[in-house]
Image (cartoon, rainbow, N blue to C red; front, top):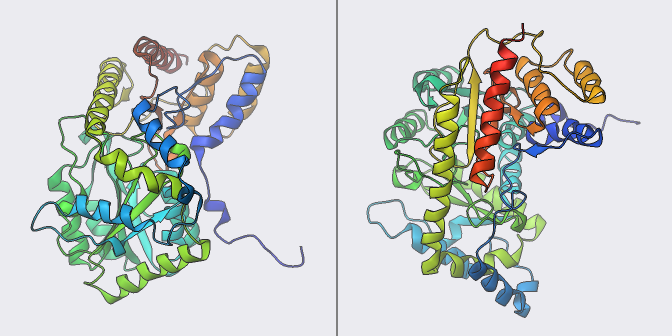
Length: 434
C-alpha cells in the first residue's frame, strides 16, 4: 500500500472465545465430534425462548412502525419505561430517559465507549478480562490493557489494594471497569466490594463503567446489587442488554444508562460524544426496543428469570462438586452468569504433557500447534482433540492465570455432568502424563 492503513492498535484485537473455533472446526473435518463449551450463546445450546415472548415479538412484527428508524437514543417509550424501573427507590441517583442510549448490542456500545475516550485516558478492568472490553480498551490506547486481579483463592474477589495502588500511581487511569456478574469467572460482586470501588473512584475523580449484562442471572449466596444503588454521586455508565436473559443474542440490543453526568462537565461532554457518535449510525434496531417494555412488565417474566437461574445454579453445583475433588486445580463455585472458570495450580503444567489422541490426523495437527502456545492453550488443544470438548484457555482472557472457561449452558443436566466429569478425568490424565 502507498501508506500504512493498519490501525496502530490492531494487534490488541483478540477474541479467543471465537478464535478457538478455527482449530475445533479443523478437528471436526477430521472426524472429531465436538461439544461446544466455548461461547455464551444460549440459542446455539438449544435454550428455548418462552412462547409468550415469541408471541409479543410476533405482534410487533405485524406493526408497521416496527420497520422504521428509532430516535438516535432509542424509542422514547422504552427509555421512559427503563427510567421508571430504576427510579422506584427513593434516595438513589435519578435516571432520566435522556440519559439512556440504545446500541446494536453491547459489543457496539463497548466499541464506541472506548473509541471516543480521549487517547490518553485509560480504563482499568478486571483480570481475567472479558476480551471485548479488554481488546477495545487496549486498541484505543495502542498498548496493553491495564488490569486489577480477581483472586481464585478468594472466590474471585478483586484485589482492592492492587486496584487502589494502580489507580494512585498511574495518572492516566480515568475509569474503572466492573463486570457484574463477572464473565468469565461467574463471580458476583458483594455490595461491600462495590462500595469500596466506588470510594476509590470518588477519591481519584474517576468514572465507572459497569457491565451488567448478566444482572438478572444471579443464583448464588451473594445477592447481585446493581451499581446504581451504591454509586452515590460518582459518574457512571451502566450497561444492560437482552441477549442473555430472554435469551435473544440475535436481537443485538443493548443500552447504556448514564448516571451523574450533571456532576462533572468533562464526563457530560464525553457522554454527549457517545450520543453524537450513535447519531452518525442513525439509530439502533427498532424491533427489540419495541417489545422490551411488554416483555419486562409481563408477570411471567419474573418466574422465567427465577426458573432460568435455578437451572444454572444446579449446574454450577455439579461443576463445583466435580472440580473441587480434582487435584491440581481450583474452581470457585459460580454465582452468576453462566460460566465457570478453572485455574491450574502453580507449576503443575509443562510443555511435555499430553492426552491420548486416537485420530492420527488430529494428533499430527495438535502436535504441530502446541509447539509455541501457552501452557493452558496446550491443554485445551489436547482436550479438544482427545475428547471433542471445546473450552477457552484462560490466558485468552488477558490473564496470567493458566486455566480455562466453560459454560453452564448445556440444557441436558446428565450430559452436562458427563462433560464435566470427562474434563475432570482429562485433567487428571494430563497432569500425570509426565
